[in-house]
Length: 226
Ligand SMILES: Cc1cc2nc3c(=O)[nH]c(=O)nc-3n(C[C@H](O)[C@H](O)[C@H](O)COP(=O)(O)OP(=O)(O)OC[C@H]3O[C@@H](n4cnc5c(N)ncnc54)[C@H](O)[C@@H]3O)c2cc1C
Image (cartoon, rainbow, N blue to C red; front, top):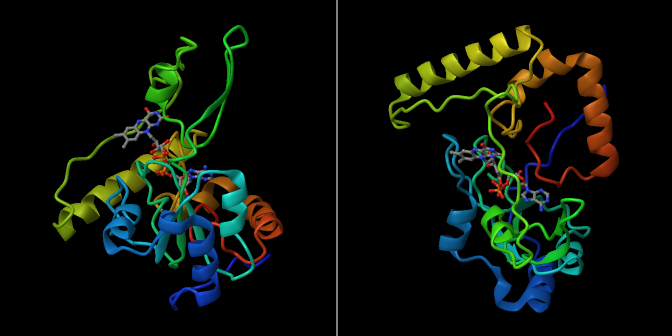
Protein backbone atom coordinates (compact mmCIF):
# COMPACT_ATOMS: atom_id res chain seq x y z
CA UNK A 1 0.00 0.00 0.00
CA UNK A 2 1.25 3.51 -0.81
CA UNK A 3 2.27 5.16 2.45
CA UNK A 4 0.51 8.36 3.37
CA UNK A 5 2.56 10.05 6.03
CA UNK A 6 1.96 13.79 6.36
CA UNK A 7 4.89 15.92 7.50
CA UNK A 8 4.84 16.84 11.16
CA UNK A 9 5.67 20.46 10.59
CA UNK A 10 6.28 21.95 14.01
CA UNK A 11 9.25 24.16 13.18
CA UNK A 12 9.04 27.86 12.43
CA UNK A 13 7.74 28.95 9.06
CA UNK A 14 10.66 29.35 6.62
CA UNK A 15 11.70 33.06 6.62
CA UNK A 16 11.75 33.02 2.81
CA UNK A 17 8.08 32.00 2.74
CA UNK A 18 7.14 34.66 5.29
CA UNK A 19 9.00 37.34 3.29
CA UNK A 20 7.35 36.20 0.08
CA UNK A 21 3.85 36.29 1.54
CA UNK A 22 4.39 39.63 3.31
CA UNK A 23 5.54 41.11 0.00
CA UNK A 24 2.62 39.61 -1.90
CA UNK A 25 -0.22 40.06 0.59
CA UNK A 26 0.93 42.88 2.90
CA UNK A 27 -1.39 43.11 5.91
CA UNK A 28 -3.47 40.26 4.53
CA UNK A 29 -0.74 37.90 5.75
CA UNK A 30 -0.72 37.78 9.53
CA UNK A 31 0.78 35.85 12.41
CA UNK A 32 -1.31 37.63 15.05
CA UNK A 33 -2.34 35.25 17.81
CA UNK A 34 -6.01 36.34 17.74
CA UNK A 35 -6.43 35.68 14.02
CA UNK A 36 -4.54 32.40 14.27
CA UNK A 37 -6.73 31.28 17.19
CA UNK A 38 -9.88 32.08 15.19
CA UNK A 39 -8.62 29.97 12.29
CA UNK A 40 -7.67 27.02 14.49
CA UNK A 41 -11.20 26.59 15.78
CA UNK A 42 -14.31 25.01 14.24
CA UNK A 43 -17.68 23.73 15.43
CA UNK A 44 -16.37 20.28 16.33
CA UNK A 45 -15.49 19.01 19.81
CA UNK A 46 -11.79 18.70 18.94
CA UNK A 47 -9.30 20.93 20.76
CA UNK A 48 -8.27 24.09 18.89
CA UNK A 49 -5.18 23.78 16.69
CA UNK A 50 -4.16 27.23 15.38
CA UNK A 51 -2.09 27.55 12.21
CA UNK A 52 1.24 29.37 12.32
CA UNK A 53 -0.05 32.13 10.04
CA UNK A 54 -3.13 33.16 8.10
CA UNK A 55 -3.18 34.35 4.48
CA UNK A 56 -6.31 36.23 3.34
CA UNK A 57 -6.22 35.62 -0.39
CA UNK A 58 -8.25 37.58 -2.95
CA UNK A 59 -7.45 35.78 -6.20
CA UNK A 60 -6.45 32.43 -7.63
CA UNK A 61 -3.02 33.92 -8.39
CA UNK A 62 -2.52 34.67 -4.71
CA UNK A 63 -3.57 31.12 -3.77
CA UNK A 64 -0.86 29.86 -6.12
CA UNK A 65 1.62 32.23 -4.44
CA UNK A 66 0.93 30.62 -1.04
CA UNK A 67 1.39 27.08 -2.32
CA UNK A 68 5.04 26.77 -3.37
CA UNK A 69 7.91 24.53 -2.63
CA UNK A 70 8.53 25.02 1.12
CA UNK A 71 6.75 21.88 2.27
CA UNK A 72 4.47 23.87 4.57
CA UNK A 73 0.95 22.51 5.21
CA UNK A 74 -1.87 24.63 3.77
CA UNK A 75 -5.37 24.56 5.21
CA UNK A 76 -8.13 26.27 3.22
CA UNK A 77 -10.59 28.15 5.41
CA UNK A 78 -14.13 29.16 4.41
CA UNK A 79 -16.14 30.19 7.45
CA UNK A 80 -14.87 27.56 9.88
CA UNK A 81 -18.21 25.85 10.47
CA UNK A 82 -16.83 22.35 9.93
CA UNK A 83 -18.14 19.78 12.39
CA UNK A 84 -15.37 17.21 11.94
CA UNK A 85 -12.19 19.14 12.69
CA UNK A 86 -11.51 19.92 9.03
CA UNK A 87 -9.84 23.32 9.56
CA UNK A 88 -7.59 22.41 12.49
CA UNK A 89 -3.89 22.84 11.72
CA UNK A 90 -2.82 19.43 13.01
CA UNK A 91 0.69 19.79 11.58
CA UNK A 92 0.99 23.59 11.74
CA UNK A 93 1.22 25.57 8.52
CA UNK A 94 -0.69 28.40 6.87
CA UNK A 95 -4.47 28.83 6.93
CA UNK A 96 -5.60 30.07 3.52
CA UNK A 97 -8.70 32.18 4.22
CA UNK A 98 -10.85 32.53 1.09
CA UNK A 99 -13.58 34.73 2.64
CA UNK A 100 -12.44 37.75 0.59
CA UNK A 101 -12.81 35.79 -2.65
CA UNK A 102 -16.49 36.60 -2.56
CA UNK A 103 -17.53 37.50 -6.10
CA UNK A 104 -20.43 35.94 -7.94
CA UNK A 105 -18.92 35.29 -11.38
CA UNK A 106 -21.86 34.07 -13.40
CA UNK A 107 -25.57 33.58 -12.88
CA UNK A 108 -27.75 31.72 -15.35
CA UNK A 109 -31.19 31.71 -13.74
CA UNK A 110 -32.73 29.67 -16.57
CA UNK A 111 -30.29 26.80 -16.06
CA UNK A 112 -30.14 27.40 -12.27
CA UNK A 113 -26.38 27.84 -12.63
CA UNK A 114 -24.24 29.95 -10.33
CA UNK A 115 -20.46 30.21 -10.73
CA UNK A 116 -18.99 31.76 -7.61
CA UNK A 117 -15.66 32.31 -5.91
CA UNK A 118 -15.13 30.10 -2.85
CA UNK A 119 -15.85 32.85 -0.31
CA UNK A 120 -19.41 33.48 -1.50
CA UNK A 121 -21.83 32.51 1.25
CA UNK A 122 -25.32 31.11 0.94
CA UNK A 123 -26.86 34.34 2.25
CA UNK A 124 -24.82 36.44 -0.18
CA UNK A 125 -26.03 34.31 -3.06
CA UNK A 126 -29.62 34.56 -1.88
CA UNK A 127 -29.63 38.38 -1.89
CA UNK A 128 -27.71 38.73 -5.14
CA UNK A 129 -29.35 41.23 -7.50
CA UNK A 130 -30.10 38.48 -9.99
CA UNK A 131 -32.91 37.34 -7.74
CA UNK A 132 -31.77 33.71 -7.97
CA UNK A 133 -32.53 31.85 -4.76
CA UNK A 134 -29.90 29.25 -3.86
CA UNK A 135 -31.51 25.91 -3.10
CA UNK A 136 -31.72 25.17 0.62
CA UNK A 137 -30.68 21.65 1.38
CA UNK A 138 -32.82 19.77 3.83
CA UNK A 139 -32.56 16.38 5.43
CA UNK A 140 -36.02 14.97 5.14
CA UNK A 141 -36.14 12.37 2.44
CA UNK A 142 -32.51 12.63 1.37
CA UNK A 143 -31.38 9.79 3.61
CA UNK A 144 -29.18 11.96 5.79
CA UNK A 145 -29.28 11.36 9.50
CA UNK A 146 -27.21 13.16 12.07
CA UNK A 147 -27.53 14.03 15.68
CA UNK A 148 -26.41 16.89 17.85
CA UNK A 149 -25.40 15.49 21.21
CA UNK A 150 -25.39 18.14 23.92
CA UNK A 151 -22.49 17.55 26.27
CA UNK A 152 -20.00 19.40 28.41
CA UNK A 153 -16.79 18.95 26.35
CA UNK A 154 -14.73 19.55 29.51
CA UNK A 155 -16.29 16.43 31.05
CA UNK A 156 -14.01 13.64 29.80
CA UNK A 157 -16.38 10.82 30.78
CA UNK A 158 -19.32 12.48 29.05
CA UNK A 159 -17.22 13.14 25.94
CA UNK A 160 -16.19 9.47 25.81
CA UNK A 161 -19.83 8.36 26.11
CA UNK A 162 -20.78 10.71 23.26
CA UNK A 163 -17.93 9.37 21.09
CA UNK A 164 -19.05 5.79 21.79
CA UNK A 165 -22.63 6.67 20.83
CA UNK A 166 -21.39 8.35 17.64
CA UNK A 167 -19.28 5.28 16.76
CA UNK A 168 -22.32 3.08 17.31
CA UNK A 169 -24.45 5.23 14.99
CA UNK A 170 -21.74 5.07 12.32
CA UNK A 171 -21.52 1.28 12.66
CA UNK A 172 -25.29 0.97 12.22
CA UNK A 173 -25.24 3.28 9.17
CA UNK A 174 -22.41 1.32 7.58
CA UNK A 175 -24.05 -2.03 8.33
CA UNK A 176 -27.10 -0.76 6.41
CA UNK A 177 -24.97 0.15 3.39
CA UNK A 178 -24.68 3.81 4.38
CA UNK A 179 -21.68 6.03 4.85
CA UNK A 180 -19.87 7.54 7.83
CA UNK A 181 -19.39 10.88 6.10
CA UNK A 182 -23.01 11.94 5.57
CA UNK A 183 -23.15 15.59 4.57
CA UNK A 184 -20.47 16.81 6.97
CA UNK A 185 -17.55 14.93 5.46
CA UNK A 186 -14.81 12.89 7.09
CA UNK A 187 -12.33 15.50 8.31
CA UNK A 188 -10.53 14.02 11.29
CA UNK A 189 -13.74 13.08 13.13
CA UNK A 190 -14.78 10.18 10.92
CA UNK A 191 -11.33 9.17 9.65
CA UNK A 192 -11.15 6.05 11.81
CA UNK A 193 -14.29 4.68 10.14
CA UNK A 194 -13.23 5.11 6.50
CA UNK A 195 -11.32 1.83 6.13
CA UNK A 196 -14.29 -0.25 7.30
CA UNK A 197 -16.41 1.40 4.65
CA UNK A 198 -14.01 1.69 1.70
CA UNK A 199 -12.03 -1.50 2.33
CA UNK A 200 -8.29 -1.97 1.94
CA UNK A 201 -8.39 -1.51 -1.83
CA UNK A 202 -10.57 1.60 -1.54
CA UNK A 203 -8.19 3.18 0.95
CA UNK A 204 -5.22 2.27 -1.27
CA UNK A 205 -6.92 4.08 -4.18
CA UNK A 206 -7.57 7.14 -1.99
CA UNK A 207 -3.93 7.21 -0.90
CA UNK A 208 -2.73 6.85 -4.48
CA UNK A 209 -4.89 9.80 -5.55
CA UNK A 210 -3.79 11.88 -2.56
CA UNK A 211 -0.10 11.19 -3.18
CA UNK A 212 -0.47 11.88 -6.92
CA UNK A 213 -2.10 15.27 -6.33
CA UNK A 214 -0.18 16.20 -3.21
CA UNK A 215 3.24 14.48 -3.27
CA UNK A 216 4.56 16.69 -0.44
CA UNK A 217 1.57 15.90 1.78
CA UNK A 218 0.91 19.60 2.43
CA UNK A 219 -2.75 19.95 1.45
CA UNK A 220 -4.63 19.88 4.77
CA UNK A 221 -2.65 16.92 6.13
CA UNK A 222 -4.22 14.57 8.68
CA UNK A 223 -7.74 14.72 7.27
CA UNK A 224 -9.88 12.26 5.30
CA UNK A 225 -7.31 9.66 4.20
CA UNK A 226 -6.69 7.10 6.94
C1 LIG B 1 -25.07 23.28 13.28
C2 LIG B 1 -24.65 23.09 11.84
C3 LIG B 1 -25.57 22.57 10.94
C4 LIG B 1 -25.23 22.38 9.62
N1 LIG B 1 -26.16 21.89 8.77
C5 LIG B 1 -25.86 21.75 7.47
C6 LIG B 1 -26.83 21.28 6.54
O1 LIG B 1 -27.97 21.01 6.91
N2 LIG B 1 -26.49 21.15 5.25
C7 LIG B 1 -25.21 21.46 4.82
O2 LIG B 1 -24.92 21.32 3.62
N3 LIG B 1 -24.28 21.91 5.67
C8 LIG B 1 -24.57 22.05 6.97
N4 LIG B 1 -23.62 22.52 7.83
C9 LIG B 1 -22.34 23.00 7.28
C10 LIG B 1 -21.37 21.89 6.92
O3 LIG B 1 -21.33 20.88 7.86
C11 LIG B 1 -19.96 22.47 6.86
O4 LIG B 1 -19.64 22.92 8.14
C12 LIG B 1 -19.84 23.60 5.91
O5 LIG B 1 -20.28 23.23 4.62
C13 LIG B 1 -18.38 24.04 5.84
O6 LIG B 1 -18.31 25.30 5.18
P1 LIG B 1 -17.21 26.37 5.60
O7 LIG B 1 -17.13 27.37 4.50
O8 LIG B 1 -17.43 26.90 6.99
O9 LIG B 1 -15.89 25.49 5.56
P2 LIG B 1 -14.75 25.39 6.64
O10 LIG B 1 -15.28 24.84 7.93
O11 LIG B 1 -14.02 26.69 6.68
O12 LIG B 1 -13.84 24.30 5.91
C14 LIG B 1 -14.31 22.96 5.80
C15 LIG B 1 -13.28 22.15 5.00
O13 LIG B 1 -13.25 22.58 3.63
C16 LIG B 1 -11.95 23.03 3.27
N5 LIG B 1 -12.14 24.18 2.40
C17 LIG B 1 -12.81 25.33 2.69
N6 LIG B 1 -12.80 26.13 1.62
C18 LIG B 1 -12.11 25.50 0.64
C19 LIG B 1 -11.74 25.80 -0.70
N7 LIG B 1 -12.09 26.96 -1.26
N8 LIG B 1 -11.01 24.91 -1.41
C20 LIG B 1 -10.65 23.72 -0.87
N9 LIG B 1 -10.98 23.36 0.40
C21 LIG B 1 -11.70 24.23 1.13
C22 LIG B 1 -11.26 23.37 4.58
O14 LIG B 1 -9.84 23.25 4.52
C23 LIG B 1 -11.83 22.31 5.49
O15 LIG B 1 -11.15 21.09 5.30
C24 LIG B 1 -23.93 22.71 9.17
C25 LIG B 1 -22.99 23.23 10.07
C26 LIG B 1 -23.35 23.43 11.40
C27 LIG B 1 -22.33 24.01 12.35
